[in-house]
Image (cartoon, rainbow, N blue to C red; front, side, top):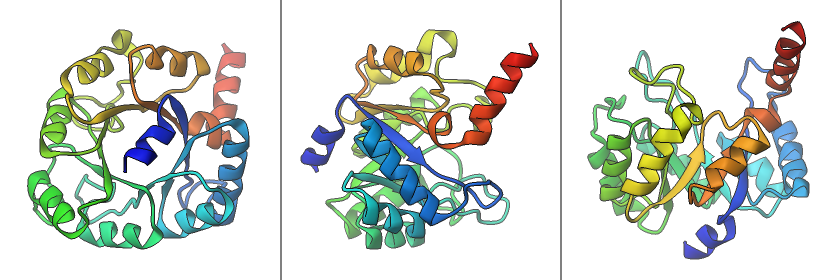
Length: 230
């Protein structure tokens, strides 16, 4: 566990994900994306779905942060929401598993504390990453025993919608780094330029995740078009 954390320390984690409605949706393409990320110097890959993770692991020897985005009815928690997704991810041998660690009710009505306890009882050695949206959630996840805390869901929950990690002089990230005592803090969420990535490292985060700014060409193109049209 510590060896994996050491390997990603001060490194770039590239999120290689494409959903069904996106142009690059394909496990094969995500595998090639992971190769490109490694060639560029990435230290870790974040990936969604068993198929994508297995393909990525065939192509690169980098650690993988695994998630499964699974929607259950009208429930808002969709990042690795239940033990069914944890079990599936363990089969991929992903080095780290990330889950929604917000205060929202999970689809199976379990509290985060119950869910965390169930994971640890079954898989005591897996590295767990808490995707949170507030400082309170970060502290709670740290106290539970998560190995990594990240503000991944800041901007995507009630009360934070539309917010970005670099707004307000990175206030939330600074609070999390200061408040979290045991877990490693990883910066994730709307890190869209190298300058932003550099800035968050100056806040003593363990690593930084960049996704769409590297692996979603439709988003990259739109930023160029928006700038041109201004």
